[in-house]
Length: 92
Image (cartoon, rainbow, N blue to C red; front, side, top):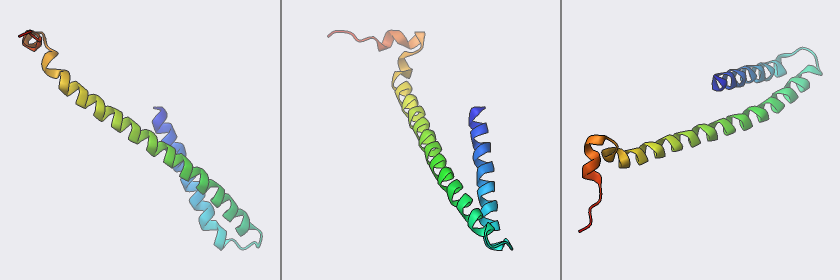
């Protein structure tokens, strides 16, 4: 649930930044384009940093899930009661 909220806020910020980017060259007032450009540059930095952090988190979770699946495959043959007896190590 929290991940969906983060994605929603990130999307809204991206739309706001895009709006400021579009308004900067088209505004009839002389001072407004500089203000829109400054807001866009500020929001772009926030969006780039947030997107990078989110991608690192997603990649980390993917690696953890992949590693957990690989380790469970190694233990899977001995996990059931029927095959547990055949998995015991015997001394020669």
